[in-house]
Image 1 (cartoon, each protein chain N blue to C red):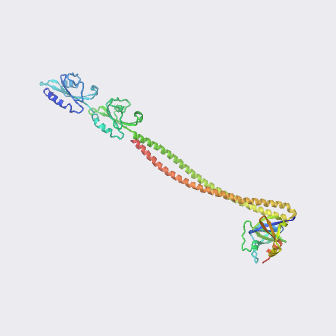
Image 2 (cartoon, each protein chain N blue to C red):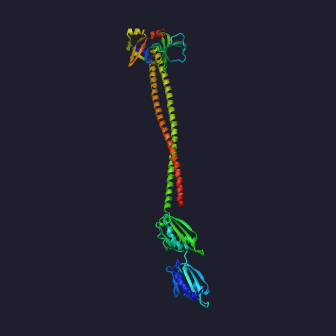
Image 3 (tube, each protein chain N blue to C red):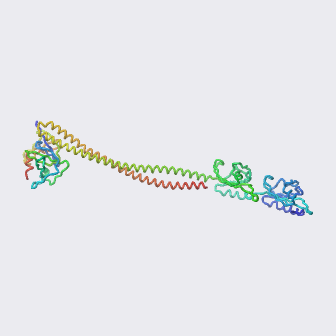
Length: 147
Length: 382
């Protein structure tokens, strides 16, 4: 039986998860974010994380198309490392790290998955909760690709 | 002097006058030293005035005969039992020799005593609580007049004066005495006024006039006003205590309010502390999550570390869950304390009202007290 470890985070009312291997660390949102010109509004800017420049994505803007996303005291910056590219995503809360059996992940059927450009890999069900498991590799391409 | 020839006319006059003179009178004709004719009023007589009675040398009549002069003498009470005035006029015959004397005797009364029967019955009724009016001579009660409302049967006519009696002392000191006597002697409180009386001509002390009046009303009034005063004092003391405790309540309520504000401040501080707890819990959670990520990245080597990370996250979740509970508790405390503060303000208002009211009562009591003191003074002067 093989297990999978997931980092679960919240965006508004929805819960999302990424494989833990894509996660690097969780930090508070820095006060200073360097704005970038000529970039889409969901890219907040750049920060310096221990000598490395990392782009910051407001995932709610990107996913929901909202103009302005609210920040709370629980808002965090989840630093991902996908194929050695560092990306910071602003999330409402990083809820937990969970361990699930790979079999318990419901894969979406090919049609539905195709409609979402394979961004959502599957659904993890824990009690009443439905957690959307994002495809990490596609995710990088997704957030760094202009629409 | 009277001529022997005129004696018959004198006798005729005397017969006629004897019963016209108030207080009574005696007429007598003495030949040499013996009464040969006597005329007396119905109301007055003396043993010595009897036909055939011989007179001693020291009598007024014999002195007048011997001295051939008209003689008037006041005879003290010791001689005939009452004061008497004797006037003796010598009678001479044709040759100018002494034949005898025409003697007149009448009782000597003090004018007050003479009028006693006229004024005393009226005067006695003129006192609101009645009066007992009496006259004494030098040794006993001679006249007495009771009123409808008040009588002193133990001090009747003939009562011998004792050393303790006010009349006796007035006679001794020759001064008027006005005294109040409590109920122990005659059964009720009395005022006794006694004035010594002198005879007109010689300024000799002869009698006393006394008026006894009951003092029941005045004494009752005085007792009542004393009672009133003492109960007012009690009330005033009670009110003073009341207003002192109202002041204390006021002070305590003020302190209570300060304490309540203190409690509110403390619960706010608790909230600050719990915010700090939340911060630590958040930090710990992040630490746990990062540790889990690090452990996953380390693969199998990080498994033990992963367990620790899991425990850290659980701990953080636990401490964070206390925060809303603390907040709920401090909110409850705040609510209760604010309610207590509101109630204490109400009782503060009430105690202020109480203090004001008791001050008003105090002022009224003071007024009543001064009135009762006036009343008491008035009663004393009655």
